Image (cartoon, rainbow, N blue to C red; front, side, top):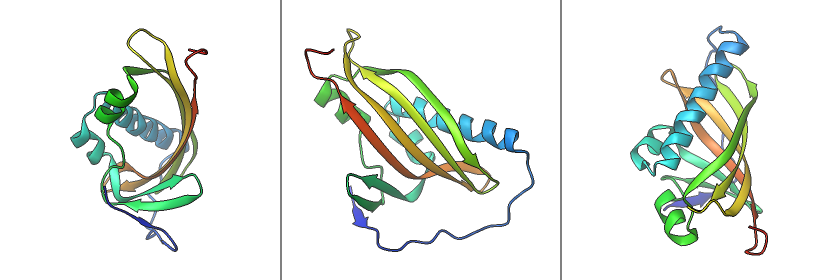
Length: 149
């Protein structure tokens, strides 16, 4: 993975296409749903098709630009015993013809259903060549200790 710190980054503005907010929310929700399906299936090609690189990754106290996806679902599975994610909810917080903000949350569980962690994530998307793609993300994770799962 190659990430560089962000000090100043500007996204080019484009002329918005007139579409209703409801239509845009459906498009963005479908894009996030497709990304989440790829993530849960460990489909790195699918994930990469849903991301506009460089990806801005907002972590604890810093921001990086990543030229490739910064995490591997397969590695997460092997390292934590993560089997799937349940109780996923997503909401489009704001959208226009060029940019969207989405919040999402869920709970990662092992094969036996025991909880590993819950999370909240923020995605920023841009419309590129007619497709919504993630260009920034920030996640807050709430690990569950063994006696709480």
